[in-house]
Image 1 (cartoon, rainbow, N blue to C red):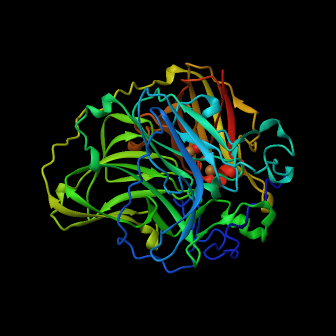
Image 2 (image 1 turned 30 degrees about the vertical axis):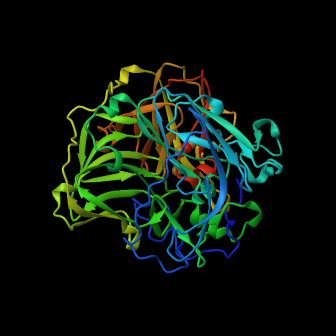
Length: 514
Ligand code: C2O
Ligand code: CU
């Protein structure tokens, strides 16, 4: 049980990339990965218009079909990038759905690799949750479990795997409040490279309560998927691959074990895009879909974010922020009022944790004065605050790296992930206190259950911790207490670190809701 799996090989087969990875170089207390440098000249920022992903169309009411396939798209102007995307797009189509409308999404896989689709933030039956060994394999392709030395799943043992040939129907009851959810690949051992290649998109749950608020709507309600990538000279994605058969240079595995960051920031799949806006309020649904990069988002020359929602929907009341730190997997639903700026102003969304070009995210150009009927009311959603006394059990989950050299692994409570071996058995309908801590940046994500942050290092939570969450930014050696409510379904679910390279290197655990 030493080497979990060879971490590094090649994705595009075009040469191993070691640029920019002087071991540990440049890591600061706030930086959570190692930057991979692009081989092509970086695109000029703020020239590409912000794309908004297409809305998925049902094949009939309540039924959708989406195909995972490869496609060539233009991300960096003048070059073609092969993406692996839902319907061949990156981001995939946005599912715009209503609370209570049970929806079936058939995912057909036409990729050369197995996939598993997880709806992040969804309250779904266990067999529709996108468990990492519950795979869809393209028609005509076989599946063999990876050899023991390269997997956390048990050598050659098929008992932990479920294989759906061709396609799988995921059932989403949507019995949950309006929220910005997202879906992405969750394949055992390979989530990081497969999401990097494009397997991610939005799913918005809407409901009457949210609709009734005078928040900005329609064209002024925009989901923003923020992530970083690096590119080869020919425009293809650059990534140190996880293919164990291509294992090379042990020092390189070490360098990227902390997580892979790119030097190009994409919003909705476009590099440093620009959006012309009215001098009005906008509702921006911010998602950090990066493998490892954290962002501290701010507006320059100025402006505030008025947060109206978190991971799991509306806050009880708006919270104003000058800056918002977003860890991988987290969502912040904010209102920005561009009427505060004269027409012609360029407002840049920046990442103050980034350096060089990665400091920029995107730009808004205030184009015209308009009439704006929107408002941010003082009261938003219903969030009943949980009290510590509600917890029927307390559990500690320690996220830590064990072992040194090429054989190190990311673990929870000292254990590398084993599918089917639960670390906890919470009871349906109860609340538990889950304490998260660890040795590095570990954004902790719990499937199925939502939680409220109770404290950080024994002190009150951060202003950005408000509301119901499903992912929490746990910083090095920080102790984060959460109250987790187990609702929805019994069965096998999981929690894990959402730095995807950590997740792939075994930083996951099952829990059974009983
Ligand atoms: Cu967004 Cu289990 O993941
Ligand atoms: Cu981690």
